[in-house]
Image 1 (cartoon, rainbow, N blue to C red):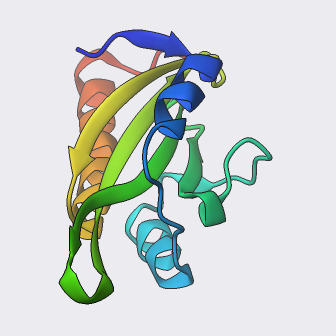
Image 2 (cartoon, rainbow, N blue to C red; image 1 turned 180 degrees about the vertical axis):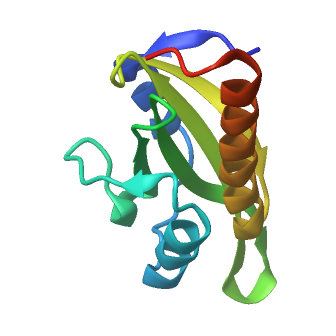
Length: 128
């Protein structure tokens, strides 16, 4: 389990990464594949700056997907890496989640979170 940090510490950690902007196509893939996680506009996170901010009221969590440089190849080809940060307590506490190399894997992580949430609700009941 990753250490929990404040919003300011998370932003400082992300600022050290070489971020890449999200394209409209990438944002569309994330939004279509993750219906439980609705996109939410926030002044703190901009897709053009390599951040995609998502809020999941049903899961009581917030997420920031950060797109950064994984590898630079010859002829200007850049391979991205996607890191998912999970926010708790209305975005006051953040934890570094999985880091994946494919956009499809980002959607898969969110889908698994939704399935896990449903299973926990069935086993232990909804707590609100």
